[in-house]
Image (cartoon, rainbow, N blue to C red; front, side, top):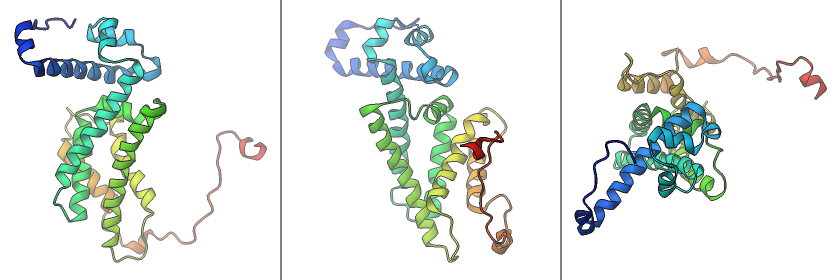
Length: 240
């Protein structure tokens, strides 16, 4: 049992079955929040159900009442996060036509959600391949939908550009996610940089680059050099 948890009135529960569902969902959310924090601190594979039991003050038997396994906990964390961020994004994009406004909404929605859920963001970034089978496939489907939505917004922005030289859409899409998803390593939601300022800076950095206002030809570095493999081990490339 969770300490200081109020006792249920069995008669009122019987009269209102929805109340039981509500209490179940609240308890499950409590477990998932703590599980996400521990997965973020210790990583998924180093965490045990006993760790989660101690953190939540819920017995192992009680935990298994809410989930079948540690893997199911990880699945529910990932599925709930992608589901919530997608649902909110689609609501906010409804009836928006300007692709630049769409991009701003996309970035703000992503950063504001994960700035409030930093442990969950780390879990999504680090434990993407820790699920297997149908659980992995289900989360991957949601993740792909989210990625394709970002790519479509960037494609719409490109189609409005007059310049003949354009960034590869795959590079642009994953560069955007790289900028946003890395914040769990350095951003402090309680620090001096507000979420709104974070959103503004990343949006401007992504759209205009760090050297804002530079002419396009100033970024033409001449003939493209052939990238050579470079290993920390001197004989690695030669001897492979």
